[in-house]
Amino acid sequence: MTDRITEKLQRMQEQLAAGAISRRDFLRYTTMMGVTVGAAEALAACAPKPTPTAVPPTKVPPTAVPPTAVPPTAVAPTAVAPTAPAPAAEKQPAAGRMIRYNPQLCTGCLVCAFACADKWMTKYFPEEAADTINLEFSRIRPMRFQWVDVLNQCQDCRLIKWAEGSTAAPCEQVCPQAAIHTVPEGQGEASYTGYGYLTVDRELCTGLDLCGRCLEVCEDQFGSGISFDPIQKKAQICSRCGGLPACVDACPEPGALAFFPQQSNGRYWANTPSAMAELLFMKIYQQRRTV
Ligand code: SF4
Ligand code: SF4
Ligand code: SF4
Image (cartoon, rainbow, N blue to C red; front, side, top):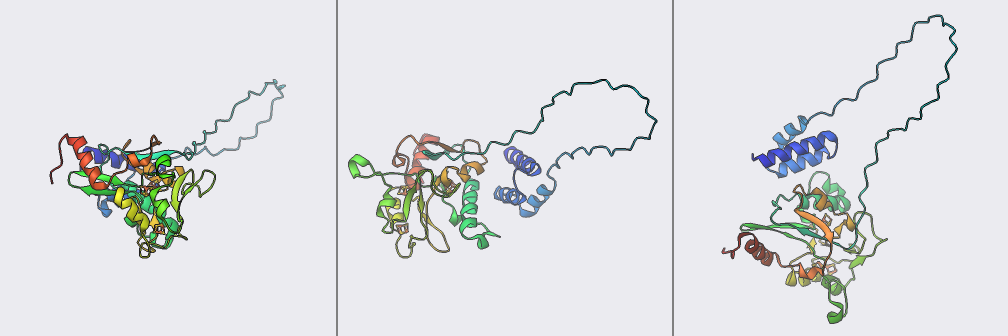
């Protein structure tokens, strides 16, 4: 086991002990790192225990001593400010951002995809999600090419108003059901949709077997930010979790995934995964990828 993995395991044990992650998450993340289920259970069991809270000593009733009559000296009460711990700042959703990943920091561990799949599968198929996580529910899709890993995800690309007459997304334009739409700030479901990000209305989408036009248009150009759930085959798109991306929070590599202000139309960032793999390879190794 490398030092980095050992270090990460220790960090997760500390987080488990502090209650920052659940036991289920601990087991999930450690097994994804290649630890066997038995070993993961053992690691969870030997996570450092939280320091026990000091128990105040039991008060022993004082033996009654006849009081000596001493006139009490008046002491002005000192105002002691209560030392209540400051509440943890709650994350606020952010609009106008994009998710970018740094391929040099991304290790291809799939934790982002598990977090995404877990979130959406639990939302739409809680029964199936009770004992399994299916990566097909993930809207962020790590793809393994020879020598480079590529994260594929909707880049929120838009048509160009002056040239194409609209600022809609191509998938939004072609959907015959108007199922793909932008949910404005103030609407949507907190931590799932809203804040100006795209979403798919599952009631309206007729699914891959009958339609799939959104997939085609995206795949032709960028390839593809659209996926389909394996149960009802309805379209799925990254909604940036309504401005609170779970994948970014879950990523164990600092800086590998970032949620930062969108600087240009996502079209300039979007590439087919294979083109992205070529670009990344050249960038990282300063030579063409020969397969
Ligand atoms: S990248 Fe694909 S899924 Fe995302 S907005 Fe563009 S066409 Fe739609
Ligand atoms: S598959 Fe669904 S979301 Fe995609 S174009 Fe068809 S109806 Fe619209
Ligand atoms: S932002 Fe949310 S929907 Fe998009 S890939 Fe990340 S976890 Fe999935």
